[in-house]
Length: 175
Image 1 (spheres, rainbow, N blue to C red):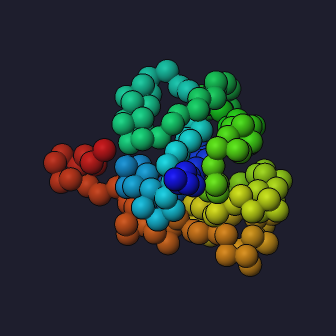
Image 2 (tube, rainbow, N blue to C red; image 1 turned 30 degrees about the vertical axis):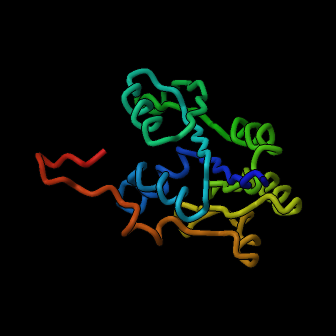
């Protein structure tokens, strides 16, 4: 019996979250995981995220939604009297994509960040790239050449099915 070929997703959570929020909506993380499972047969979805004290309930929720969380330590820096939290996950995403290379049939990279150009290019050359899911139309020009090969899927065009809906109860959103 032949083993089923598995697809894995590698998600730049900050790029995805900020991208959809810049369009005026919030992603329903549960629906997004289901979308990856149903549309692309993603068996494992690695979510690369900065680790911030106080966000434990968010992390637990994301794990309940069947994401595998890969944490990046964050740094706080002061910028014009405001505290900014920085946790760039690029190196971790590239590293884990390559560590898992033999374990997946195809990879989906969820980002619009051009820093992943070399990874995407390598995966495409090796026929291991399934799709690039870019949060908005404003993704890096370094990734644009992959659009001609039909790798790019824009998440903003999926808003109606992936948006977090309001419940109507005191303005809270469904988890």
